[in-house]
Length: 293
DNA sequence: CGTTACCTGAAA
DNA sequence: TTTCAGGTAACG
Image (tube, rainbow, N blue to C red; front, side, top):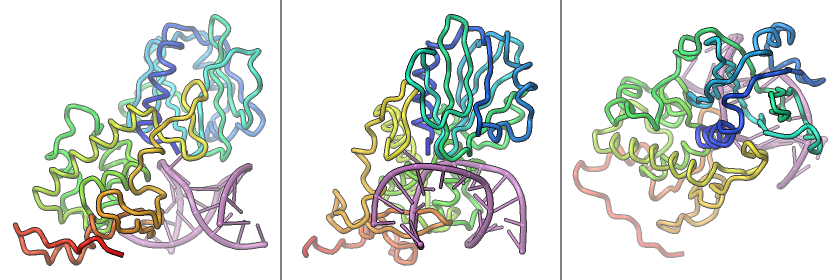
């Protein structure tokens, strides 16, 4: 569930609470064995306990707990993972899968309904995450960098953007929102974008992600921040899960289709279909049909 | 490249 | 009862 803005919100919440603290214990709850991907809990415990947390970073949708020996605990929340900063006396959290006890008495609780989340400790995080594409809120993410990731691709634009090797951190919500903002249809071939479209898409990606961070993420169902609070971005989405509702730009009913196996939401008027787009005479905007019922 | 599996609970 | 879910890896 969590995409870049949600993971970044959690990072910002937790960083001041955990950085500088020493890890005093690591426990895997019943049902949490899966998140270690076969690594014995004892092995992780040996790498974590006694270490001090020196920084809390993020790369794409991964949270990076930097340890004082240079190793990094890499956490991915996948669909339903969450990390809460709690006190031991706080009420239990449902679907608890693992806990990290910190010096000073507080703990980090990892909950995960669907058990897709992953925890791993690696010596070289950069190497482990080397497959990820550019960081969309980083300085290096320019329209040119975006195009370098998309050019030559025949996959639907949406699928290419969901691929973390192209751009790191976009997920289903923010891709749909970015494509709407850019006025691009989800199924146009990724490599077919013209220069103006690349620029629009780049700006839209940066804008929707920043907006998501500012609103502390989107809580459609399960997502909650590092203290268990909901985000606000779900109140501001323009297409995501707004099937049948009027587009707030042109009034056309938002459509839902499936692209690359994922529910996809778009405005048929603001995001002209791939074929129409390619046929449009260059440089002359096509007339938009009048808004009437 | 598209499809399926992974897992569980909520909503239809 | 069936379908769907904000992610990704493993298939064919």
